[in-house]
Image 1 (cartoon, helix red, strand yellow):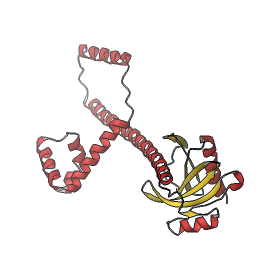
Image 2 (tube, helix red, strand yellow):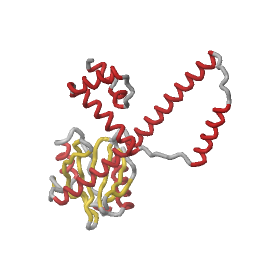
Image 3 (cartoon, rainbow, N blue to C red):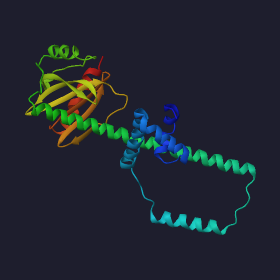
Image 4 (cartoon, rainbow, N blue to C red):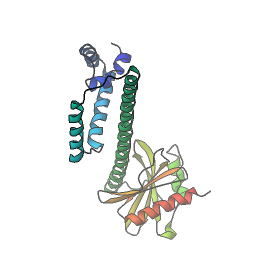
Length: 256
């Protein structure tokens, strides 16, 4: 069995849906092919995440009793012989229902995994904020002048992040630094609000939107989009202040 044949059977093998001969052939191939073995592990990982993260709703007792009653009545009724045409309708209808259920499970699973990915980004942003604070590496280019911070960041990234000083509104630009967020090199703008530090991660706008705001490990995380950029702010300042601030940044740069 080659990789092309085995790759098409990995999912079925993981679900133990193969006959004995093909199962043995796939198993033998996986022992000597690291690429296909990695695909098998991906299937196992996805299945584990779906089981752990997709909500499970047990059937209520009333529904259970109704199903049992229907099954009991079905045993008492002699099955009528189906015309050939009706049998095909029944078979194709069952196949379509099975496909629909599979697609529904895939959509729900994908949505839950995307939600979990968004949560992971928020966790990563908070961890980065805390690490920068504790390591005394919060600012790599120290300046309140946006014309100093912006060129420094742009020269080290493949995009040019908008930078604005809002000292007049209580949010003073202190500088910036480079970080990695969601496996992407991003610009981090550092602001001061009273006695609080606010990190704002700025990167090109994502295809999927993050949640508006949340609290992670005692830190507030707020999100906004504007000027084709994604703005993610982290701080211990109150959630309403942080949300208004990051939306203010996004609006300022969304204007032509």
